[in-house]
Amino acid sequence: MKKRFYVLFKGQIQGVGFRFTVMMKARDLNITGSIRNLDDGNVEAYFEGEESAIYNLLRDLYHISGFIRIDDYYMKEVPCVNDSNFKVIY
Image 1 (tube, rainbow, N blue to C red):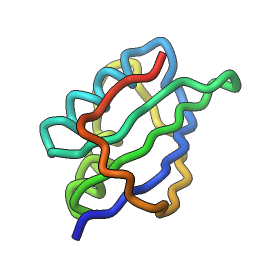
Image 2 (image 1 turned 120 degrees about the horizontal axis):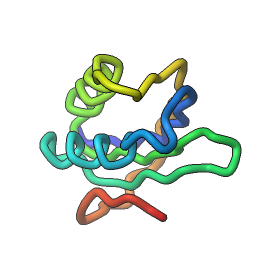
Image 3 (image 1 turned 90 degrees about the vertical axis):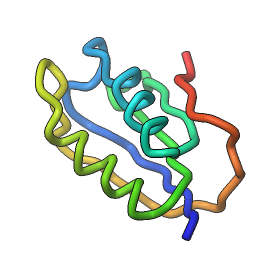
Image 4 (image 1 turned 90 degrees about the horizontal axis):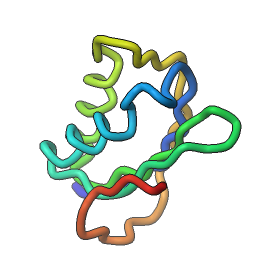
């Protein structure tokens, strides 16, 4: 079943390629939505797609090597908007 989630990520996630990495993984899993940096150092994203794919994406993000480190995230379901792709908002 298709669902949409708002996710707020906290950790070492700005200036380390996090948004690009999320975009590539989301596209691989047919997830649409968007991701952007916030002024407080956190990153917010909207993921829309199959619920299992979204949970797989979140699981995979915790196992990224390199400088990316997720300390915590907050997630809530929101209404679907039928995005056509996944994009990084600058």
